Length: 120
Image (cartoon, rainbow, N blue to C red; front, side):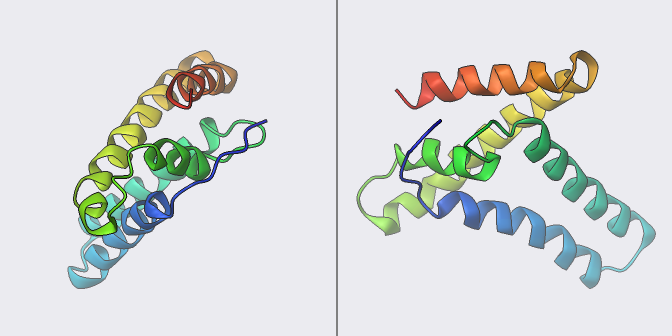
């Protein structure tokens, strides 16, 4: 469906989102930190599932949308691109919350509409 060159920045941000809670749970081993880390990872995985469209995974969509904000200089792009990817991730979580009520197809349709508007 989509054929867009993606940047690797979204994969770095998603990797950090998965690794940071794990490192936090290991460094401060308590029931709260382990449960919070599990909740963060679970919410990101559910968002990736609910906002997956045919032909493009959630991570690829984040990469494609963040690639259009590349400044041409990696040092400058790294300063602000993680904020853009996190905003898109939060929007995906917002769609997922409504998708749990209205159904997964609602989340996919809204995410696809958002992708089409962003990748024009």
